[in-house]
Amino acid sequence: MQTSDFDYHLPPELIAQTPAEPRDSSRLLALHRHRPDDGIEHRQFRDLTDYLRPGDLMVFNRSRVIPARLHGTESRSGATVEVLLVRRLEPGIWQALGRPGRRLRAGAEIVIDPHSPDAGRTDGLRIEILETHENGLRTVRLSREDELDNLGELPLPPYIKETPDDPERYQTVYADAPGSVAAPTAGLHFTDGMLKSIRDLGVQTAWVTLHVGLDTFRPVHGENIGEHKIHTEWFDLPQDTADAINRARRDGHRIIAVGTTTVRTLEHVARDSGGNIIATSGDADLFITPGHQFRLVDAMLTNFHLPRSTLLMLVSAFAGRERIFAAYHEAIQRQYRFYSFGDAMLIL
Image 1 (cartoon, helix red, strand yellow):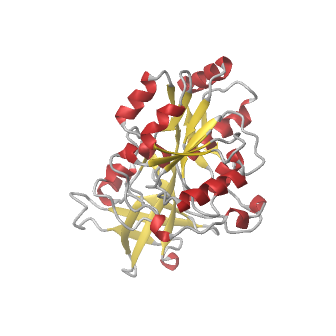
Image 2 (cartoon, rainbow, N blue to C red):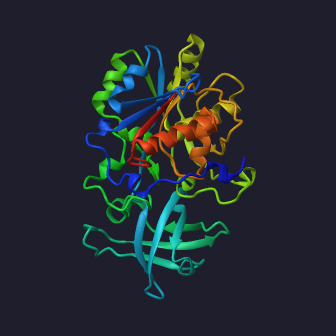
Image 3 (cartoon, rainbow, N blue to C red):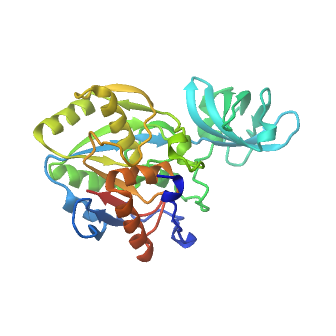
């Protein structure tokens, strides 16, 4: 398959600009992979429990979005620049994107203004460009990381033009592990009450962490999918989650991944496990495309993804490209809301 096989046209008015209120009032398209008909059902997200069974294991990504977008000036020229922190490599050292790129060469220093109206009381922040890379990334050093909460902004995707009144609406209700530069958006639909209802049904819950990184922002540009190099993202799968997964597999229960980030974590670990899942952390480098043999995930909850994206390729690998594109076509016809703040899809 080629990248153009994963292209489609979305009317701009279907790109959700604001989150559903309340969270669980979004719509839900349920797609049954193995039904002989189109397998599509149209529901509300709060109907999710109708598709769950006692003993199911739902796995969530607890990563929290950090205020990774910083605005400042280049110290020598005074030019206005923007820096987007992408991944923490070690204390104080980050991978980052920036614009304009010509201002962000090795040796440049960016001063983040401590006197902006939204900064509060702060001593300011300096960012030194240590190295530039061919893919547009920079390696940078922050003078202090403890000022990010004061000076940074949540890095909303470029297709969202409105900033939510409440920044917590771009966080899941269970997010407690800071490190992502984009929200694991399938989890945005859950409320505390809905999580309780799921557990009351007898569904087990478990947690992983995967810090969402660069590929969320970048479509696949080349036509040959096999030549696309996916960026690694740090993950952690703790012992209690490993135990829950092994128990669910032993007892014949489904493993339901909440979000493509959780899918990527589970399938990366399963690929390297040799059978029994063990607690592990590291860099996930698995690029899931059609033909991938899923080892752990039996069902997934996700949102509607951008054309030509690695995430659209992932869900196509799980459900089949033709079924996914038929479901997307119907979702567009029925005016579903797309992307980060959009509606949900449950693939069974």
